Image (cartoon, rainbow, N blue to C red; front, top):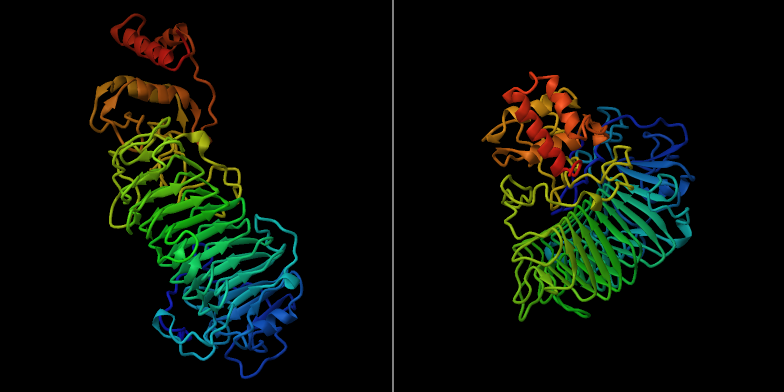
Length: 570
């Protein structure tokens, strides 16, 4: 294995789902090759004749082609240049290349780390020291080079692609130290770590100009800084962020992400953790995790935790815009300056929360949600309470030590609103099923019984709790188990109404779950129960017990009670 000689202090973190080890393509002209270890650039049509720099490989690649880049450190030619992306060309890092030991097409982005570094002189120090001659923008998506058909779904060949790189050491005197995406550019950034980059204005890690259409999938933004807004990223475009992590970034405001002057930024299965506001110009020190100004952001299955603001909105801040969160966990954020407001969330306009958990945030006023009334908050667990349908004030019983999974015993389990869970249109878990409900933050099935509150669904061993005997069908056999174990029961398999937890009782709630789940388990596409009247209950009982026996009477009584509870009979 080639020894790793990456820049000092870099977190070698790569997004989920882009690590592979496989022979991808042959030297057939459809793929161009780059390996910094070659003595001089060849024609780029094979590994032995690879180009020496990324930009050389990109230059000779035609639309629909890939550029495979071996591990190592690659840099722009000078401070004023960048690695420029190209329309309908996919640039892929993480290949082993010409080490002479194994197939050069072997790809593993964790083992064969490929850096694009703005550290022209190779002398970067801690806290952005010695950055004076670094590249202004390490990676650039320029208008003239990226004019593919805008498709937010990230169709592979419709735009420029950058896949599997660690981007480090940008130093912009304006915006976009790590990545600058210019207007009218359509770009997919996938499986990249953007780190230790700086912007004097906004977007230390990345800046997306108005009119662009960027997709970031499985990316990590860590350790970036902006003097004004968007330490990790500032987007003035309708960006789509899928399974991305923003951690340890700093900015005057919006330390993790800043959304400004644009509608429809979507964040699905993202993490905003441990980002810090330092204070600055407009809205100084606000929005530790997310800052929305005259824009719209939609968050689904997101974790907003341990962020810090100086004044307002430790986790999320919005002014003149709209934030809508579904199944998000917003916890342990803080606004810790003087006269602080909204430790978890601050909004002066439209705020919508459903199936969320807002807990243990800190501020002088409205520590969880500000305003303390008037926002649309439903089916959400808010510490100290919040008015709205289905809301609770109950300790979520997180696992702890930074783990925000739930444990049995909290009301957050099975108490959400199933119809509010969106369909996985963007296929965030990349399982080729865009018709399913969006999976939870672990990519686990989002609805097993009734959806849980927060970013994580409590893990379960089965997707069909009503199938007590596990034969693949919910039928009379399961109904009989419930009836025969009726009453207090500490560990009965038939105690399924609070699945995957147990409430200690087998009762009408469990029987009703059997009735409403009747039929085949898969997808709960179930046939109606075979009884909808008292006579149906009597006929079913007669198939099992002697007519009018005590067991027969008990069955009919409980069956009738269940139909009545379900609204089948009066």
